[in-house]
Length: 75
Image (tube, rainbow, N blue to C red; front, side, top):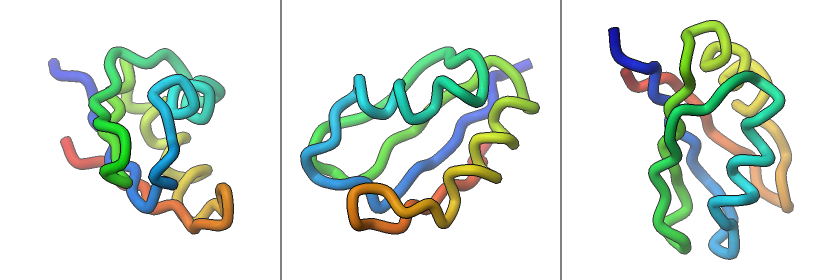
């Protein structure tokens, strides 16, 4: 069974991998973060579906550094 992958969009251009980790850690264990700085989006793999679903519920529509985040499960 593969890890659920979350897409997070509309990230600030100055965002770092460490900040994404800090943003997502409260929702559960993270398997991997795919992110290239300045792209405005990241993919975060959580170890379980419950954590990924919690992340979507909390991050989608969140105001973060004067931006409204988009979050959805993509696999």
